[in-house]
Image 1 (cartoon, helix red, strand yellow):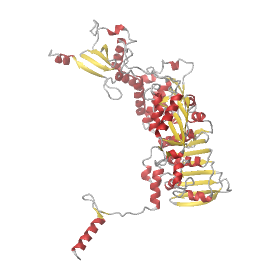
Image 2 (cartoon, helix red, strand yellow; image 1 turned 90 degrees about the vertical axis):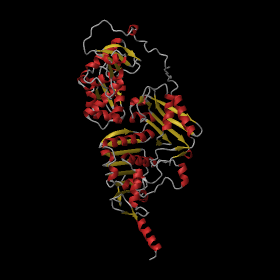
Image 3 (cartoon, one colour; image 1 turned 180 degrees about the vertical axis):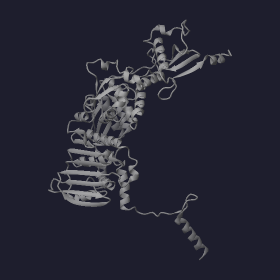
Amino acid sequence: MSDSNNAEGRVGTERAWVATEPGSVATHARHVHILSKIVSDRIAAGEVVERPASIVKELIENAIDAGGTAISVEIREGGLQMIRVGDNGSGMTREDAELSVERFATSKISSERDLQTVRTLGFRGEALPSIAAVSQFEMLTRNKDNVQGTRIRIVDEKKELDVAGAPTGTLITARELFYNVPARKKFLKAPLRETELVTKVVAQYALAYPNIGFRLAVDGKDSLLAPPSSPLERIGAVWSREAASEMLAVEYDSFDLKVRGFISKPSFARASRDWQNFFVNGRPIRSGLLAVMLERPYAGRLLPNRHPLAVIHIELDPQYVDVNVHPRKAEVRFMQERSIYGAVQQAVEHALRDFPITQNADGMEWPFANVPESSFGALREAQAEYRAGTWRALGQIHNTYLLAQTPDGFAIVDQHAAQEQIFFEWGTGDRGQAAVISSHDDFHRTSPPVISLMPNEASLVNAHLDEYRALGIDVEPFGANTFRVNALPSFVKLSAREVLDTLVFEHDKYRALEGEALRDKLASKLACVSALKAGDALTLEQQQNLLNELLQIYSPATCPHGRPTFVCVTLEELERRFLRR
C-alpha cells in the first residue's frame, strides 16, 4: 500500500472517531441522518406541548374554530393526570378524524397564500399529533350529518379506531401527560401552579369570547362557570362583579382598524400587569408596547407601581398582521405598528377624559405644614433627667432620619426602617394576635368591608387563612371569591382593599412557602407598606415615641430586610474627631 493510501486511511480513521476528554472513552462519530417519526413527533410535541396549559390552549382554539358555543375543560392533578376538553362544534367525520392526528393535517389553510389572510386561531396542524405523542390520547367526535361517532385511541404510537356513540362535537382526553418523556415532566411545576396556569388560559379565552359558554372543572369541582353573556357580564363572571363595576368602555373606529373593550378606572388597579389582556382578531397576544400605550394615558391618574386592568380587542384586516412569527402564536407582527399603538392610546385617553390628572409639583409643598413651630427649636440639650439606656429625640434630618442623644453619644435612626421593624415584630409576635382593633374608616361602618378577589387570588387566601389571621388580619370567606375583613392590625393605615391586594401580590411571589415562613414574608410586606416613609415630617413627641417603641422590641438593630435601623456614634469618637483626645 502506498504512503498516500496509508495517509488517507489514517485520515479516514481519525475522522471516524471523535477525541474526548483525557481519560474518557472515545465515541464513534454520528453521521447525519433523518430522525425516525417517533423521535421527530416527540420533538415537535415539545414545541407545541410545553405543559398542561399549552394543551388546553390548543384544544380550546380548535373548539372555537369548530364553531363551538359551549366549551368544557376538566383537569386533574394540574393536568398531569388528565386533561379533557369538549365542545359542541361541528365535529368530524370518520375520515377527517383519522387524518387529524397526522402531522400538518389541517382544514384551515391549504396554501402559502392562506397564511397571509388566516382568520382561524389554529392553522399549523400540529396540535393533536403533538398531544398524542406525549400522552395517552383519546378523541370522540361526531359530525351532525353522521349517525355514529368515531373514537380514536393512541398510546405509544399505536392507533385504534372504533365506532362509538357521541353527541355532535368533539371530546378529547389526554391522560398521563409526559409519561413517555420523563425529562420534560420533571421541569413542570407543582400541580397547584399548573392548575393556576390552566385557569389563566381558560379565563383569557373566556374574556375574548363572551358569546361562548365556558366551564372549568378542577379535580372534580367547578372552578369557573361562564355562560354566554355580554362582554361586561363576562368580566364579572371571570374576575368579579366589583371589577366589572369599575370598568370603562373604550372604542376607536377608523377605515380599517377597530379598537374595542374595557379598561379599569384609575381607582381600581393591580400591582402587576397580569390583568391586561390584548386580543388581535380574537387571538390572545403578548405585547409590551401595547401595555405601554395602554398605561401612558394613566400617567398622573394612577398611583406609582400600579397597573390598570384591561380587555382590549383590536380588529384589522388579517393581511396587515403576521400571526406566524411565534412558535406558540403568542406574539404577532403588525405591518403598521404606529397606527395601531396610537389607536389604543387614543381610545384609552378618550375613556379617561373625565378623570383629572393630579400632578405633584416637586419642591412646591412645604413639608412642615402640619408640624407645630415649637418642634423647630434650637437643637440644644434641655435641663431634663433621663435614665441610662434611653434615647432622647433631638430632631429630624431631611425628614428621613431621627437624631437622638444616647447615654454614650448619639444615634442616627432611619425612621422607615425603625418603624418597619417595630410593626414586623408586632405582626409576628403576640401583638399580632391582640392588636386587631382597627382605627381606619373601613371599620367605622355598620358592617365590615367585603372584598372581591380574582379566582387565583381567592384560592391563595382560602388555602392560607391561618397565616393571614396570625398577622391580625381577621378575614373570612364570604361567598365565591369574596372575603369579609372583620379587623386589621391597629398600626395599618391602608384600607382593607389595599391590604389584601398588597399581601396577595406578595403571597403569589412566595407561593411555595407555608406556615411561619409565609407569615414572616407577609408580615414584612405589611410592615413595609404601613411604616413611615422618607419625607414624612414628625413632631418631637412623635419622634420620641418612635424611639421608645424601637428600644422595647426584641431585635431593634435591623429591619426585616436586613438593613440597619440606626447608626451610633460614641462621645469618645466625637472627642477624637474634634482632637479633644
